[in-house]
Length: 114
Length: 111
Image (cartoon, rainbow over all chains, first blue to last red; front, side, top):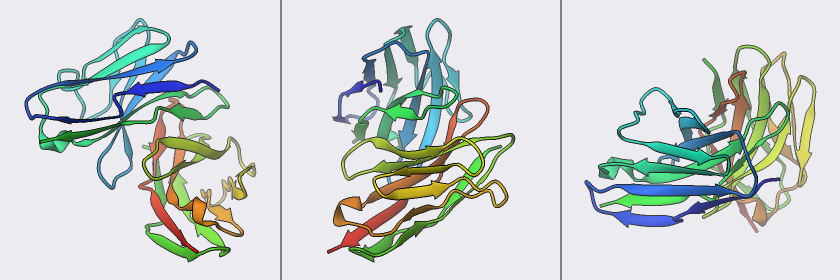
């Protein structure tokens, strides 16, 4: 199965700044997904990123706050903009979703906003 | 919309005990069902999956059977080990290929 490299693995950021998280996949994939896992909570889908089109955001998430790039079939970035302490979470990228397969997740980025 | 309800944790067991983590779902159509595991400090790993009714997913001694009549996908293991201590997430994939997760169940296995 495909391998995802996600970085950074963790970061501590000042409020008001932005952080860009990168995911690199070792094979070409059509769909990539970005999730947020708030402390002690489950995973919530932020957006779906397909190459060559605008990302599709879930309810409660907007492009100005979480801009996403998908320049090719192996790479995507998620930016958390104008951060506040409420953005402290683990952010994960994911690939997969074919008719029979499961999903593969990156190792996650643990973000703390101070 | 789709939803997943799983047993609230935490669950604490002794080594070699029997494990059940309940999971029920609400979905339109015919979802695929998954169990994911998150070990301390690590990302999510697919544990097992089932894509249609009566399928049984199994891996590492864990099993779950897709029960359409009860809309359930309970996770079981006959004899847990300390190394099974982790958070377990039940999830479904609907027709839009998006995953919906349950809230997760923290399992702690004591020696």
